[in-house]
Amino acid sequence: IRGLAECYCCVPSINFWRISVKEKPSDPVEWTVGDVVDYFTEAGFAEQASAFQEQEIDGKSLLLMQRTDVLTGLSIRLGPALKIYEYHIKVLQQCHFEEDEGDSFMG
Image (cartoon, rainbow, N blue to C red; front, side, top):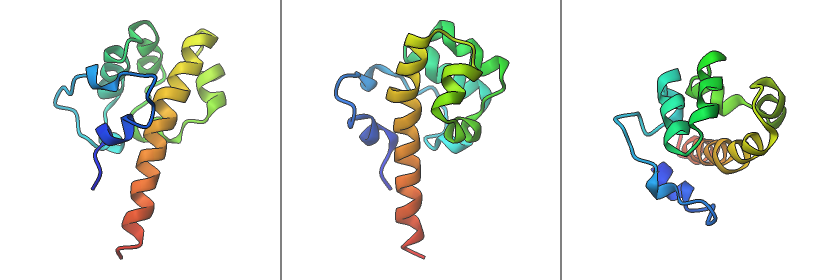
């Protein structure tokens, strides 16, 4: 099973290696609201992380978010919202759903 760190490498413009792992489950589906807040705080979005807390976004919710949810539903500025979606949420979704597809063929 491929870890998230490998997925993070698909976005060369962002240094994901600086994001520390603080005892949070490696699978975002298992993340609590606090884990999601910690993730975005550590990724440099401390100000925006509170929006995930206010909206009670846990790992499962995070993986279900669409672009419009992030751009309008979280009530955060457009610039950070775009970066959060494109460089974090979208990458986490791609990695998660890619792994799920691989697992389903192993049946």
